[in-house]
Amino acid sequence: MHISEGILSGQILGIGASITLAGTFIGLKDLKFEDYPKVSLLSSAFFVASLIHIPIGPTSTHLVLNGLVGIILGWKSFPSILLALFLQAILFQFGGLTSLGVNTANMAIPAVISYYLFRPFLKKNYFFSGFLSGFFSIIFSCFLVAFSLYFTEKYFINLAKTIFIAHIPVSIVEGIITGFILTFLNKTKKEIIWGEK
Amino acid sequence: MKNEKNNIFIFNFSFFVFAHKINIFSYKEGQKIFVEGYFSDGKPCKNSEIIVFDEKNNKIIEGKTDEQGFFSFNIPETSKIKIVLISDIGHKVESEMKLQEKLIERKTIRENERIEEKQIQQNIDEEKIREIIEKEINKILKEIEKERQRVKIHEIISAFGYILGIFGIILYLRNQNKK
Image 1: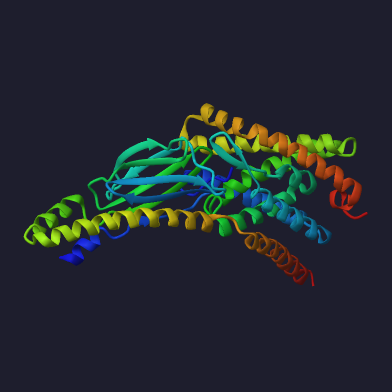
Image 2: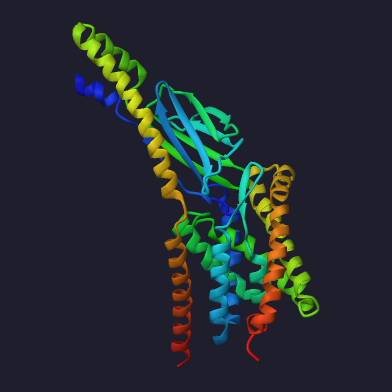
């Protein structure tokens, strides 16, 4: 889901970069001393997830884990995802530096939304709210990717369809994995989810 | 003159990559140019759009890769081409290739060579050998390039270090400001 350099128009790149800048600012303001290890840990998880490839149809895609990052970090997802994507762009040429803003916004906006939508239900059922968070974050990211490409491609419906179909299996896998990780963290290291008490 | 001829048949390939990551590998073999598109895990880029531009950036050839991610076309009459591979979901990669001397020039040289009958024989053999070597080297280079593009474990581990380091620096700077 990383959009390459040289595909999007300047306007979209600008909008993406501004959203990312604003989000990162809010995220960094929200960042407390005890959050640092947690944010770095989730940054690393997000970074590695993109390297696990799942071949689907004509294309090949990968885990994203923005649902997991989002439900735990909230606004802090912005700096966390920005750093991971920056390193992926530099080390592996995934995405690109000019499209970094758009790519971060596409991943981090759904993460922040799932924080507000699903975190309130987390205590009731860890697995299920984790699943929903993982599932909907990917679907919503797909929508944002299709939306960003729309301004250059102009055949939104077809494009959106291709992207959704390619990502439905991933979003299910992602939901299950996010669910398991949250259940596991709840049993072993609650403070990662809820912070030190 | 011999040097000139050598230049024409000099081994020619190019790769230039940026994407998440589809890669492109293009090479000349005989009278054709072969293009192969593949993802960073080595899976082929099936049914993806290929556009070839000439030196003046005019679109000259358009097509789609097959099930194995391959596409081939006859060498066009231009000195430089740019091959663009676009896969769905915003993946794009470019490869530039210099075609040095054109086919026409090759013909003139051949005509000149007729003066020395003996040398022709020698050159034709050389030509064939060159083509065979070219073919074999292309295969090896493709493997090397695929290996080079593969994500290495030490790069992943170093990224963890960067992440910790960068958040460490942010934390340090913030604490400094508070003091």
